[in-house]
Length: 279
Figure 1 (tube, rainbow, N blue to C red):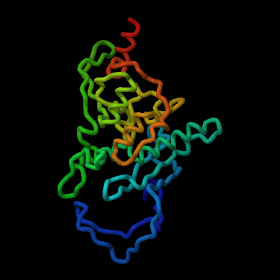
Figure 2: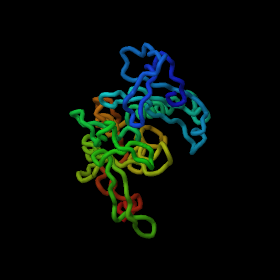
Figure 3: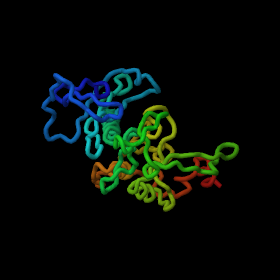
Figure 4: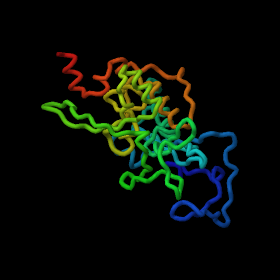
């Protein structure tokens, strides 16, 4: 299976059995390799099934990769499931549907909590240290995903986060890869911004796998759909920082939300921002 889709036999290699660390693999007897798919970089399987996950939290669609290539860990197969009861195919909502599909494709290509640990730098070296025995990143047992390094996502603590009736210490997760940092600083016009903030709310499939809604509002890679979604330079920078793609920045759409509003907007709470601008 790739997501909800049964992968055709002709796309599959031989069946191999391996030991517990994924090594010492042997071909299963009687298994034959299919012809595969020639001259193809990535295959995307799409389904529209009203699954269990569709019923949870008003999910419109979800996606992930299901295969990576051996040499540089790039995802080579992925899937998306569009929840039939949550999507509209009415002509005036076609743009929303298209944006949703593009959003899901980007998850499968790299913007995903299950792929961050595999990101590589411009020289092709892993951004996250690898285990010597398997060559894979270390596993986070709690989350059941490979754990990324601080060079990819860093936890930052804001000591004085203003809320109603006082302030708290707030921990946030920031994407801190080089191009993302550069684009986020440029966008908000804040030279000390650590990176681009990731979403901290929502369950499985939302938190950490999207940009933070508060400061990226209508960026198409935030976790909930809004009017006029745009794929900005910041999202293209993330895709390029995976080490697997070269971004064509002329294809980015301008993000107006938060543009040039400075560090106070990007690094402080909404309550703080409102108070400062209505003082």
